[in-house]
Amino acid sequence: MAALLALEVPKVAAPLRQQVEGVLRRAIIDGQLAPGRRLTERELMEMTRVSRTLVREALRQLESDGLIAVIPNKGAVVRELTIPEGKELYAIRAVLEGLAARLFVAHADEAMLSALMQSAEKVIAAYQEDDYARVLETKNGFYDVLAEGAGSETLSAMLNTLRARIWRWRALGITHPQRMPQRAKEAVRDLKSLCAAIRRGDAAAAERAARDQADHGAASALRLLDVAQPAPAARAARR
Image (cartoon, rainbow, N blue to C red; front, top):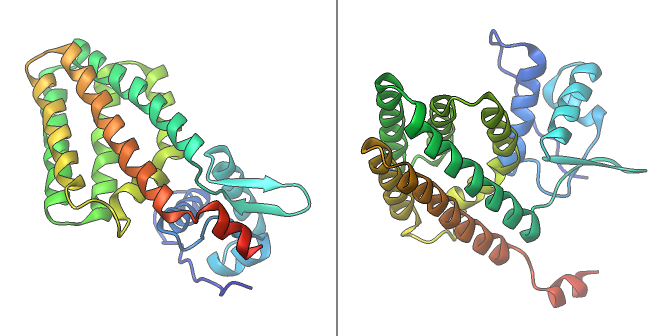
C-alpha cells in the first residue's frame, strides 16, 4: 500500500470544498498522487482531515475535469496520461486559443491590452527565474486575461474546461527533468510573438501565433510522455 500523504488544506476564505479540490488537484498535477493510484474516500479523509461529504464533492469535480476516473468495482483512480488524449486536447487548445487571440484583437480595449502585456511579462519572468510552479500560475493568469478580452462567455467557459483537462500536460512539459533545455526559450519566444501580433492589431497573425504556441507545447509534452512510458516489451515483461 502506498504511503499515506499529508495533504494540508489551507484555512482561507474560499469554500472548504474548493480548498479540498484544489489540494487534491495540485497533488495529482505534482505527481504526489501518481497516475493509476487508487483514491479511497477513507484515505483521502485521513490525508486532508475533512469530511467524507467534502471528499466526495471534490472527487466528482476532479472526475468532471478528467483528472480521475471512477472504475466499477475499483473506485476512483488517478487517470493515466495517454498520447491519443494529449493529441486531441492540444488540437482543441490550438483552435480555442487561436480564436481567443483573434477575438481579443477585435474586442479588447487599451486597459485589457495593458493587462495582457503585464500578464505576459510575469510569465516571462517566471521562465527566466526557472520558477516552474509560478510559470503554471502566471500562464493561467495570462489566458484568463486573453479569454476575458475576447469578449465571449461561451469561449471563456470552454477554455476553462479545457484548462482543467490540460493542466497536467502543461505541468509535464514545464517540469519534466528530461525536457529540452531550449523549450523555455521557445515558449518565451512564442509568447512574445503572440503579444506582438496582438499589440499591432493583426488578428490573423495573433491566431497563427496562438496555434503555433499550442503546437509547440504539444510536441514537447507528447515527446516527454513517450520518454516516460516504458516500451511495450518492457510493460509485458513486468506482467
